[in-house]
Length: 533
Image (cartoon, rainbow, N blue to C red; front, top):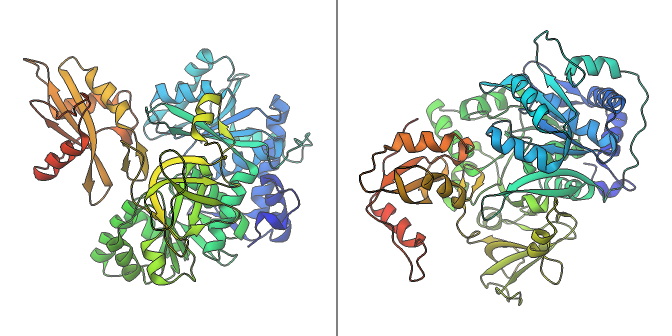
């Protein structure tokens, strides 16, 4: 592996150029239809950067990616790096209102999007957005349609062809420059743009790759979302640093992921706990496992000890876990292959290089080992700040410069991190943090709903499922299916309640707030049925 410390003032562009020069013919982006070598990715990133520069995209400007995990996503990331621009990776499945907000908030000057995916006509969507967002000057579409475009909308293949061999002024980039604005929800459910530098992302990616000895002989599978901080960091950039191959598969289910692992001889499997849980059932159904996997790395949500043991038994490979935060450019602590088995399975490993983890009282006072408190972190992976939110940035950091994660945990006598709780009122559904406040605001906007609460309930597949507890207005008539349909209009798919239960009233604390602990207890005693749709 080639960690960033081996380079002088490493940037993402310089790391790609180094790898493409050193191992030009090695496969980088691996797929069933198309596979690209490191040299091909370098050439295409250069060509796209030249065309974007010709359009007037300059260093510091924002380029949004609204794409599935396609090769074009990765090439756009590296083209932005060569220009000194800032990439804004966005979930293509976001509702229009959220997508519009993030494009406006980030000040995106250019967006690269699919023409059509997930049942959405993005070409029409962005034609409308161009009129609504004056800062959005250009849209680049990826697809196979032979369409007519104006002076703001261009087809990917046309720009790639036009930029081949063309000179452009590369941006003068410093490792401390912001490279990505990755959106995450705050405690109120409002999106926050996390500014991450080249150094932030490369540090976390290198630490993750180093923990599992990722190298040129490896093929990585299981990275489902390149727009996610783990997909962008350890997924894409970690693979680059290790000189390995990355199997691209957007939103692959258990069956497809296992098929891809077999087909491409995958050796490293990344994933969230719920993803592995689905695969275990599929392996049991098939009666066989992928023989090439040598290590499984689990991140994105707490993992039960039983699940870790089942993964090791089913895949015949060791499991390591990572503690990952968007504000930390993904990995802040990770297990190592040479850790004792009980530490690999029962902990989140140790802090990565040059990263300090403290466990504190609410007031910031340090606690001794084996004490439970708030996890606070400081290191080269910690974000530059929240985009356009200096107040939010200041509130997230303590007086000593540590990020206040809000997660509950402890450090044991050997320095291994244990995650024991999480931020208040967060539901961790299928690897996504979901904040109930946003769902509840939507629920009570329904004319038949008087009061509502959203809570997480244990789910074997998702880790946690979202349950909407609804109190109807007097005489109000609404079904569970209608509640879900109402939510799906403005909420991302992963935020729509999986379960809906109707109650006479909600349990309240003495201060009049919803008593979520009691609500969860009641749901545990009488689990509601799943609502289809």
